[in-house]
Amino acid sequence: MNPVMVDGTGMCGACRLMVGDQVKFACIDGPEFDGHLVDFDQAIKRSQMYKTEECRVMLKQQEGNTHHGGCGNCEEITNG
Image (cartoon, rainbow, N blue to C red; front, side, top):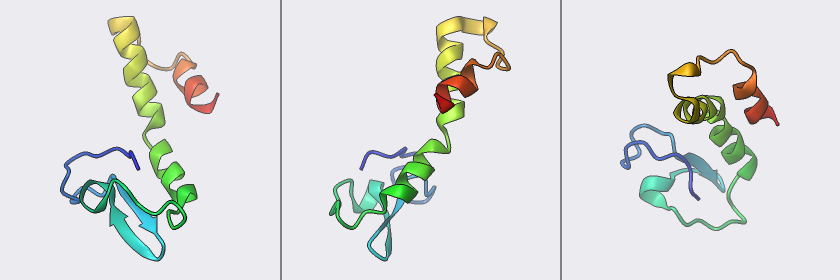
């Protein structure tokens, strides 16, 4: 698993995932897990939580200070 890892100690919970019936943290329990036991539906939903913000940051880096959001491109990238 390669989720967002913020602190590497499991305290933030950003890399939390379900493996079988247990909660695991990729930063301390992984990153390798039995793929048959990983709840990929939940993992995908969690990884998409930050997608809009990540795209806004990417566009701001590409466009510099001219990117102010609200252009529709941020949401188009995340939903497209």
